[in-house]
Length: 166
Ligand SMILES: Cc1cc2nc3c(=O)[nH]c(=O)nc-3n(C[C@H](O)[C@H](O)[C@H](O)COP(=O)(O)O)c2cc1C
Image (cartoon, rainbow, N blue to C red; front, side):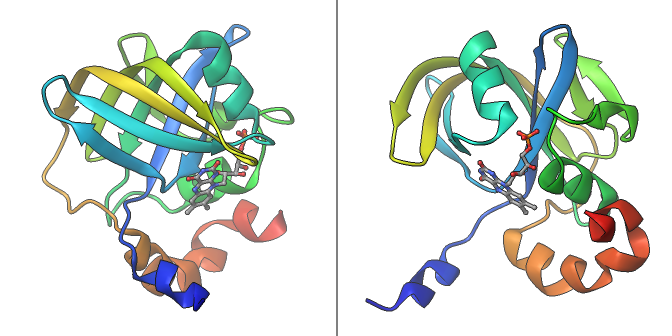
C-alpha cells in the first residue's frame, strides 16, 4: 500500500479544550469531523498518551476552537507540542469562556460538545459528541491542515519561540 494516500485527506486545525481537575487544558487536533447534522454530532480522535484524552474521558464535555489562517500559530505550537500535564497552556494563550469552557480568542468559530460514545482503537479514543452550542466568531478563513503544513510550518520558528524550543 502507498501510505502517501493519507496525505490526500483534507482536515482543519482545531484546539479542543476542557476543564479537568479545576484547570483548563486541551490540545491541537486535526481529527474532527461532522457525523450528522440532526442531531448535530461530531467525532474526535485523541491519542491515549495525550493528557487531553484522560481529561475528556473524565469530564465528557469539550470545546472546539476552529483556528483560522490568521490565528496566532503560537496556539498550534503551545497546544500541539506541550502537555497539560507539565504546563497550563491557557496561561500562555488568550481565551474567552463559552459555556464555561475556554475558546481561543482569535479562533474563527467554536463548538461546545458533550460526549455520548467512545470507541477504543489500539492507539486512539474516538469520541462521539453532541454539539450543544456553537457560533461563528469572525469571517476569517478556517485553517486547513494543508495550509498548516505548507504555509505555517515554515514560519513557525520566527513566530513561536516556544514551538522550536520544545
Ligand atoms: C497540527 C496538529 C494536529 C494534531 N492532531 C492531533 C489529533 O488529531 N489527535 C491527537 O490525539 N493529537 C493530535 N496532535 C498532537 C497533540 O496536540 C499533542 O500530542 C499535544 O501535546 C497533547 O497535549 P496534552 O498532553 O496536553 O493532551 C496534533 C498536533 C498538531 C501540531
